[in-house]
Length: 267
Ligand SMILES: NC(=O)C1=CN([C@@H]2O[C@H](COP(=O)(O)OP(=O)(O)OC[C@H]3O[C@@H](n4cnc5c(N)ncnc54)[C@H](OP(=O)(O)O)[C@@H]3O)[C@@H](O)[C@H]2O)C=CC1
Ligand SMILES: O=C(O)C1=N[C@H](C(=O)O)C[C@H](O)C1
Image (tube, rainbow, N blue to C red; front, side, top):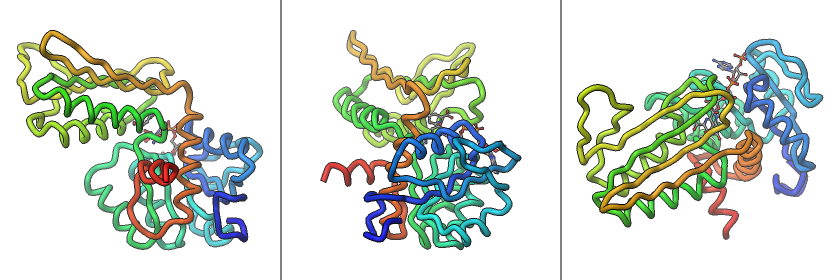
């Protein structure tokens, strides 16, 4: 962090886990494009060539690297098991954690929350600002259209592991909060499957190299409303994650979401 104590002023030093993955690479490349961010540590589980000129070390050495390099924050896009392990490493090292990893079980989220008692932890299923706007719009529409059926469809590239996506689950939580009558998530339909009024249909498509699309359909009373977000490329997630990292580095230990970063920007 810069001597001014303001990590957004200059030279936020980050660590990146999953540096050989799609998102890890994108974060390192986005950091290279920003004057205010330096990648101090980059690790991957398996051997990886340098990314944007940054050497990628063995993830098994992360605790030593955090101790020697003292980054301001760690940015993680890996898998649920590893993200939980890295959260414990961050808590031990006193390094704030931004994780965009999805697919956590409830007990793994509890583990992340435990780490947030020692260091700031920010978990977000989607770092696109447009998705934050989509979620607000969906909440408003669901509240304004009582009794309408809701169906959610997400589409991602064919290498995505978790389904439905983390973003889809966040949107489902939003809808259920606003529409107390919808409490049954139905994942696809097959055979004799008449729709119940309490259902939210959930559809996960995997195809080609689609970056990420989320569509919410509300239908009733002879009308339909569709709200859709499409990510053009992964840079949009990486930039949001770096904004979150800059904000989190100056925060107190606790549990945060991307909304906290966006709300702070509006003050
Ligand atoms: N919040 C957001 O805005 C976004 C979130 N995501 C989420 O980010 C995560 C990663 O996505 P993506 O980059 O596409 O995935 P990739 O499979 O491309 O990359 C995952 C990386 O994590 C590493 N990794 C996986 N498991 C472990 C482990 N157990 N221990 C250590 N390292 C591990 C892999 O290393 P190795 O190659 O050695 O296996 C790889 O480098 C997913 O959960 C995805 O849903 C994705 C995009 C945006
Ligand atoms: O795995 C991905 O690619 C993505 N994962 C996130 C999710 O699960 O919601 C965010 C984005 O849609 C891309």
